Length: 223
Image 1 (cartoon, rainbow, N blue to C red):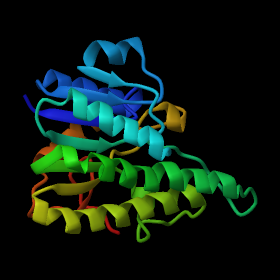
Image 2 (cartoon, rainbow, N blue to C red; image 1 turned 120 degrees about the horizontal axis):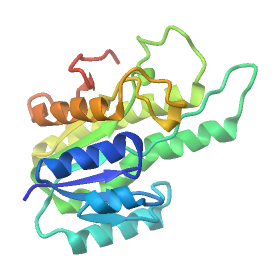
Image 3 (tube, helix red, strand yellow; image 1 turned 30 degrees about the vertical axis):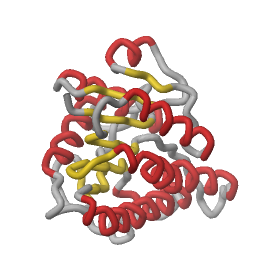
Image 4 (tube, one colour; image 1 turned 90 degrees about the vertical axis):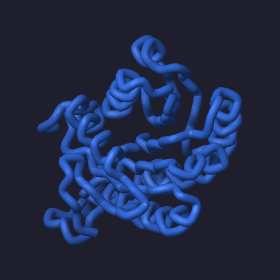
């Protein structure tokens, strides 16, 4: 049975990814700060109490996953993230630092910790944002979110280079403007639609196209 581990799986895109992979027959390991009855019902194992910004918590995630897995991990989806806005008239540097911790450093920490559990043929999907694109930035503001997602893209590209010899492919995936709590449900696609597109991109991920930056609809995005 193929396996997938998803961070931030308790709601929104993460929950729908967990649901979709469960329906496809995957063994789903769902990591989150707080679980829910809905997640507990569909995941094979819910690993709650995980703070992806804490090295001790990530080490605990690695230890628990190692005990639960009967075979190497096939797919790791770094989905946990936060979204804030800063403008030149309303700046909050602590908030910017927090976004770097959650959106950029945490995926690297989680990936590094779980690599020993992955075998050749594995895949890492970093849920990023087109707001991390410098070429696509035409509106400014959102300093912490834009910069943290750009940093995640750079981290993901380096991971793709370093992990290719191990047979592990890496993708940076933008889900779209999704109707989730993170954006006060102001998006233009549902979490279910986003999850479906993201899974299609993960299915297409190979060592030949590793390191790319894609929209969930298949469009290649500019750096």
